[in-house]
Amino acid sequence: MDIEQRQSDLIDHFVKQASAASNPPALSSVIVDATSHPLLFAFSEILALPNVLQLEATDNKSHLDMLRLFAHGIWSDYKSNADRLPQLTPDQILKLKQLTVLTLAETYKVLPYDQLMQELDVTNVRELEDFLINECMYAGIVRGKLDQLRRCFEVQFAAGRDLRPGQLGNMIQTLSNWLSTSENMLVSIQDKIKWADSMSENDKKHRKDVEEKVEEVKKSLFKADIDFRGHEEEICSESGGVMDFEEERSRPKRRRHPIS
Image 1: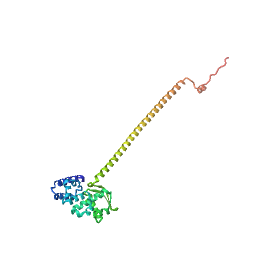
Image 2: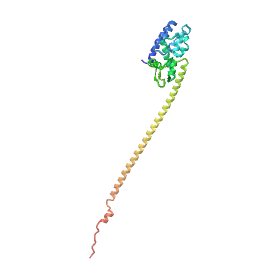
Image 3: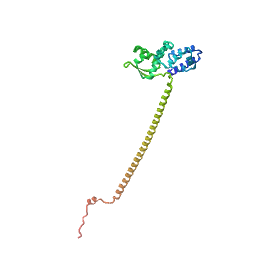
Image 4: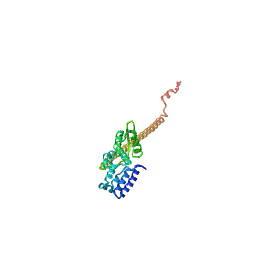
């Protein structure tokens, strides 16, 4: 099962659980379970539920803030606000660090080891590479190449995170620009296809004209050859009864006897 289908099934599961939660403590428990699940990396559908948003006015508001952190934040955001958020479990810490890698991979295609170690609170390269391989690539959320010589992670693929507030408008604008560019490119390609078709037709017409002229020349040459042969035979026929001058000279002459 690919990561998109897996995410969809898990989101449906936790949305149903959160919708059925009858009180803030029960809802907070669902939030903890969702943010701890090793295979769930998207939370916007849970965050959009009306009863989840109602936690804003309860004593469990910190769990709503924690859910927002997992939807849009990174590990350094938690460290900056740890005093007003619930204490994270080891599974939640791992999840938030995985989400941190996703956020960085969305922004940069080459991630220096030094930057990653600082963002993830990792102390050495071996620990960082193990984390990227075992917790990120094996989980299917990123793909890439570990370059030990250059001390960086080259990103080839990264799963998308939840859209941040205000990000949807920018994405719609980006997609609109892409669509406009694609339409212009399509028109340009169609024009080039029409030009190529026109040139092909012109080439075919020119070739046909040349072939027709060649045939005309062949016919003319053939007719001229026939006329020449006929004229030659006619000359030979007319000269059949005329003695050649040389032939006349070569004949012996008769001697005339004198009359006695």
